[in-house]
Image 1 (cartoon, helix red, strand yellow):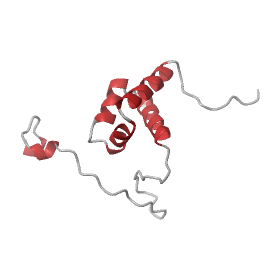
Image 2 (cartoon, one colour):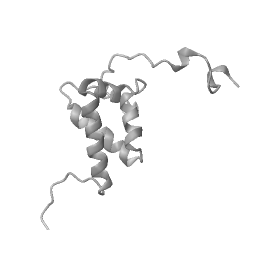
Image 3 (cartoon, helix red, strand yellow):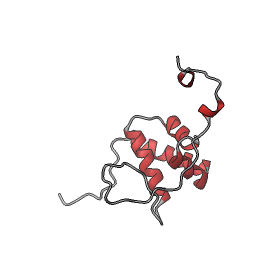
Image 4 (cartoon, one colour):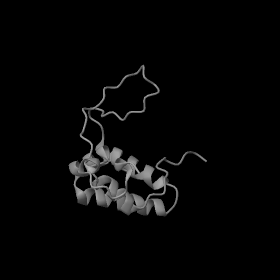
Length: 113
């Protein structure tokens, strides 16, 4: 088995987090490129809630989602965790997971009958 793919390998470089790149500029003429871009003035709370809800819809547990925020291997979630703090992120994950457990999350205002 190749050294890079051997479970339990002793290569520290293979386990180190990837270095952070500068945010990629938005390119309107590149529709096939799936890239997350940082928007100036973006709402960190909305991003946090959106990511947590997405992972909940995929079937992740609260513990798995917390790990994604604390791991330096996941840039966006880890940036939010460092910016907002452990307690805040933990509280939002718990609140959204509790809400999710009650049924489908629907933030829309009820319309006319």
